[in-house]
Structures are given as structure tokens and as C-alpha cells.
Image (cartoon, rainbow, N blue to C red; front, side, top):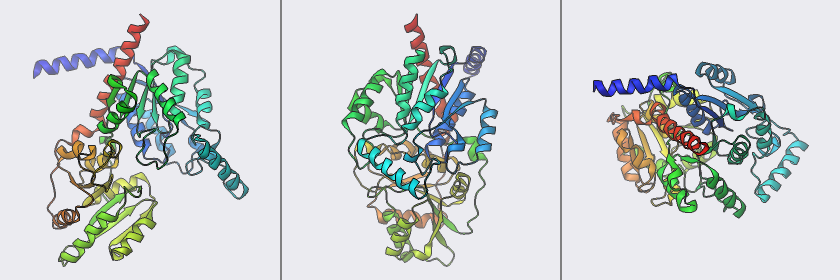
Length: 444
């Protein structure tokens, strides 16, 4: 053990004395953008910097964002972690009016709507206006400033930008898939042939690919034959952030769901059916419970609650800050996560492993997970001890588990450290360093 520790310390010391590898990180949804994907982007930048990388993030100017979350704090954290940020403009912001500031009143909203309709019919990405602006922001960079380029999508125009910068700087590029591109299970429209061809071309030219789940990786390999380029780098939780979360005091047994729904596969219906069964069978003299929803789709929850006679047991909070969401999850007796209510699923369905499941694990809150058989969400998290998985049709099983939770029978956590970004970033660090080493050999 002492020899192993000495070898590890020696390797760390050697790495710290070497020049830092330079990462150019194309991160469209980077904080303070109020988007789920921003969590992964921030943790990649932060933890790679801590592992000895010189990280430059290319991201939208916060002044162009609609409702950015704590922009001053993000600036302070970037300075604290030693991460450089190149801010960019963004043309055609009318294509993304929910996330970006634009002329969205009266005639402006009508004109923007026309542009969005045209773009959608032509298969134009609504973030296309970022590419030129980001390319311009990187125009002063030289090959000496960059060893490797990492682009995270969606939006997948970031992949296009990575290829352009790779060609100009003669540096390898790596593609990080937070979501599938042409076979997204949440996209009702069939992907265009042009998008499939562009994806194939960009994958052929990249040096490596990271993706958040094994099934999504298998699906990508099946479509494009990416083989050894592929690396699974899951989502996770940031120990620093979780340690600072203050648990909300609900004053009762609270079940919490945060985020969005994607009908017909991701809906609240089976969970509310289980709550109805719980309400009808549990003696509640000393066991008060309520279901709390945090998110923008209150109409869906309200409608289903009325259907099941649960309106008196539902509390709707609407959209709140990330800090409030994490506080609610930590204070809850149980977090609810739904990937799909269907018993069977495609590889794309099985590959959904939403980031919020790891945040619940990070704050030590048990999770009721509704997911298909053999899904990655089930397989990946079963060793944590905190996640109890159910098929959407197993109403009785969910109701029984909920009764146990209300009565104080709680699972114990174990092996949760494997999903901390402190651990996960080491996998990404190794993959990126291998790409740089291979590129240096190619040059020699």
C-alpha cells in the first residue's frame, strides 16, 4: 500500500511539473446559461483545470442570455478555478427566444416566428448564429494556444465549429455527446439525411468521442462504426456544490420531482397512480405526505392530479433557481426520476440517464426511478443503494415502496463516490491526454 501511494504521489508530482496541456472547450450552454446541460459543462471545465489542464471555455456572452443564473458568481468561480472564458456574440437570436435576448415584442415576435418556422422546415439548427460569432472570438488563437479541442453538444453546431477550428489550428478535436444527435428519443421528427451525413463526416474526422451512457454509445457505434474512438463519461455530481446545499425543511414527508416531461414516454401518470393507491391504503394519522413539483410544466401535473383525485396532495412550485431545486431534493424524503414509463425501449430509450439522478445521489436522497428493463439508469445506479427502480406498469410495487418510505424505512447509500466529478473527470482526463499523445506521435 505504501509503495502504491508513493508511486501515485510521484506520478502526480511529475504531472504538476510538466507544462499544462491546453484545452479549447466549445461550450454553448455554459453557465450562467440556465440549462440542464450547463451542469456537465461546468464540471468538465472545473475538474479538468484541477487535474492540471489549461482550460479556455468558448461560451455565449452572459449579457445576451435571457434570465442567466448568478452571472457574477460564475465569473468569480471561473477566476477561482483558473478557467479562462472567451465570450462570444450570437446572431439570429430570434431562433432561440426562450434562452436568448431578442426583439420578441409585437412585430418582432411575429417576424421571429416566421424565421423559426422557416428554419425548422429547412432543418436549420436554431443555434446556427453562434458558429460565426464563436469562430470570430477564437480568431486570435494560434496553434501554440491549443493542444486539443473539445466540443459538447447539443447544440451540434458546436461539432461543426470544432472541425473548422481543428482545420485552422491543426489540432485534434473530440466530440462530447450530452444527447444523441440524429436518433434522439425525445425528438418526434425523423432526422434529415443531411444531418446524418454531417454527423458521419464529423465523427470520421474526430480523434475521440465521449458519451453519457453505454446504450447511447452502442447506438452511435451501430449507426456510424465509431469503435475504439468511443468513451463513456457519465454525468455525476460535484462534491463541492452538494456540500454547500442546505436542505429545505418541508415539515412533512416530501416526494419531489424536478424538471420536464416528454409525453408520451416521460409522464407523471404512473407515479400519481401509485400515490393514489398510497392515499387509499395508508393510515396517515402520523404520516403526512405531499408531492412537490418544481418545473415549468405545472399544467401536466395539475391535470393528472385532478384525474387521480390528488389535487390536495400536490404542491406546484414552478421554475425556480438551481439552488432552490437542490435544496428541495436534499430536504425531500424521496426524489422521483422518470426516464420512460414504457417497459421496453430502444437503445436510445435505455440510454437516458438524466443528470438529476446523480444530484439526488450526491445529497444522499433516495430515488424512485421509473425506467425500462435493462436501462442504463437502472444498471448504472443499482450499486449506490439509494435508487429503487420500477417499470412504469408496476403501480403496486411503487405504492408499497412509497409506504415504506413514509413509514421511515430508508435505503442506505454506498459506493456513491464513483459518480462524483472528482472521479469521473479522471476518465475524461486520460482520454484527452491519450489523444494529445497520439497527435504528437503523428506529427513526429
